[in-house]
Image 1 (spheres, one colour):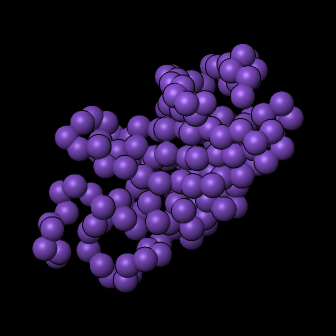
Image 2 (spheres, helix red, strand yellow):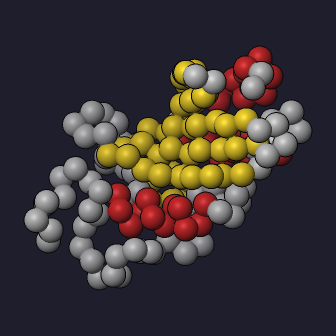
Image 3 (tube, helix red, strand yellow):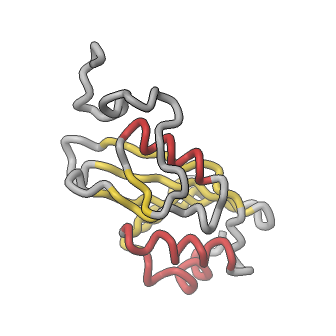
Amino acid sequence: MNLEILEEKIGNYIKEKASSRDEITLTCDRESILPLCRILKEDEALSFDFLSDCCGLDMSPETPRFMVVYNLYSIKYKHRLRIKVPLEEADPVIDSVIPVWQAANWLERECFDMLGIRFTDHPDLRRIILPAKFDGHPLRKDFPLEGM
């Protein structure tokens, strides 16, 4: 992947970047995720047309506590890209990327179900794995190991 093209197209959205073994990881703030994803998908020089995964992490005791991670792939160029978005414990909310990739629907629901991360403008944000009346989010590090 040409880092110069990436910097030219999306450099103003990036807070941090890392590269290891031909894998690029970018960190952005939550306000940038939707416009950044639109550029990554729609710009002909980038063409990240496949959202292969969206997952959440509980980084406790670090702050910010949560991280949403998007793994993207360009079928045209055969490039991979990882985007990380840190979220504070007090407000674990981020825009849904469903307007860019429909595949985000169930992936975001899983993040919500397991970690309690909310996705703004998600069309059907409800539990996907656990029962609707389940109390808590089992992938949080403060969730009791013996269950509720």
